[in-house]
Length: 187
Image (cartoon, rainbow, N blue to C red; front, side, top):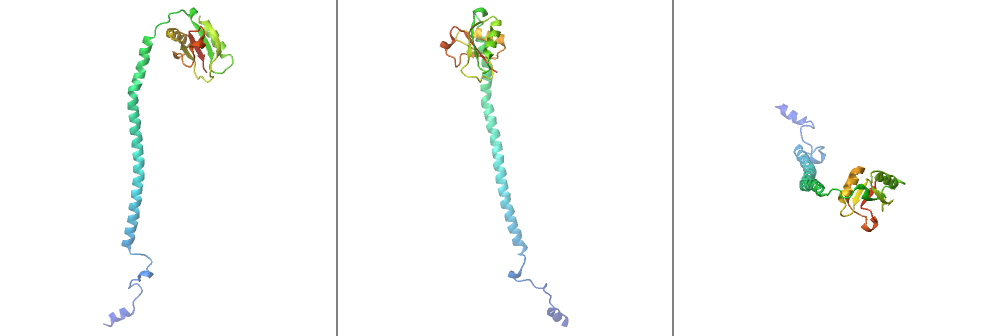
C-alpha cells in the first residue's frame, strides 16, 4: 500500500486546479453566458435596424399606393375633360382672310417671329403685328385666342401643327390691338 502514498508524494501540477488569480481562462460557463449575452444584444440591434428599414420601405410603398389611388380619379377626370371641351368648342366663324394674328417671338432667336409670320400669312391669315413675347424661354409654340375666338385659335394651331392651344394667358386684351389670335413661337 505504499503505492498510494507514493502517488501522493509524486503529484504533478496537473492534478490540482490553479487558484483564481493564477487562472488564465475563466470557467467556460461564465464565458459562454457572456458571449451569448453579447450575441443577443447584437441580434436585437440588427433586428431593430433592419426592422426600421423594412418599416420605411413598406411605409413608402403604402404612401405611393395611396397617392396613386387618390390621383387616379383626378387623372380620369382630366382625361375626360379635354374631350368634353373639344366637343364644346365652336368651329371657326371667320374665314382665315379675316382672322388677324399677332405673332410673338418667345424663343429669343433673331427673326423667328418674322419667319413664323410669313408661314402664318402663307396659310391665308392676316398679320396684325410681329414682336417679342415678354419672355424668351418658351419651350414650345403656343396659340392663344381672345374670348369668342376659340374656333379660330384651334384652326390656326391645326394649320401650324401646334399642340398647345388655350385662352389668353399673360397677354392683356389691350395689347392685342386688332388681333383675334396670338401665336407665340417657341423652340
